[in-house]
Image (cartoon, rainbow, N blue to C red; front, side, top):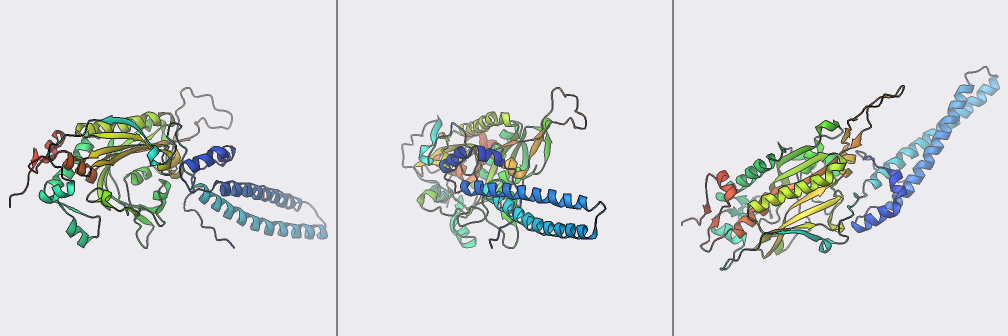
Length: 448
């Protein structure tokens, strides 16, 4: 007997669409390096439909028997009908149990199918991603460049050794001006994004594992990036996208409420399973960090334009800080499950001698909203007279969701220290951040 795990939640999946477009869905699964099993989904769906049909047939027979028994009957005839009704009831109970198991298994398998992919997304692995924009130029230093680790040590900005003793590897203490720099980055970013009509939020940093799954992340498994709390169904968030996505879970919004634009500050926690090597040294890849995240819920026809708005906000922030960066249209194999299209921003980090990802902006269309149950009811411009017995409300539709990183603090600190270092070992504070650091213009080596 196969034990079927009952799904904790159910995404609204259009099985007819999947069946009618199975070739396109299969190709999309392949292009995105997904391990979803489309053949099994289609097979389970056919089985479910067959059992459903049989259940309906037996229910009709049972009802017919029940109706016959309402009339005047001979005792033998009534006994025969009682026996028939009993057999139908038992057969129906078994089939209904089978139907529930099939439906649960189908739901779990189908929820592994990734989002659709935008037609302009490059097909392939990360190397196939294309450059959308290149901004600024690498600075010509004229002296030997230090990386952020060396700068941080000389300027007394970090303590990785004590953090390793207290918490383990990939943790850190920020000290002195680095603390002020974190606060300045967060507050400046929030103030700039709020000017664009975003509502500021702080969020819970522990969420139910079902909400993590609904947003398209895997809280369990060998290579999960998610920390789970033992003995509970809660996880630490890897991004504020998760708690913000959950705010309107199972809600029907009025069209007039859209778009909803949020900018959320939170700490983020990631296991970074499988990440190692010099490319991840220092602050570049850590288990805990502060981040400012943008999140938009909008009408389906508006999501592409909001995707452009989000990437422009990111680019404007990074340009204001004087960074040299490139924006990439990420290839299909690097989208993960939720994104329909994803733009990444990689900034030049001279001390590390390479570009490093500092941000991304994803349009998830209705993938997350179908899982989170977030709908809206369109306003009808010219309400038609209601049909007899019918309501005049327009049918609900799923919203589209988008998310984008406005500021991932540790990587921004890497960029600023390495790009603004001076020959004497000091680091200039970029103009926009000075007012948020009490007017400080320069981080200088501590006198011994």
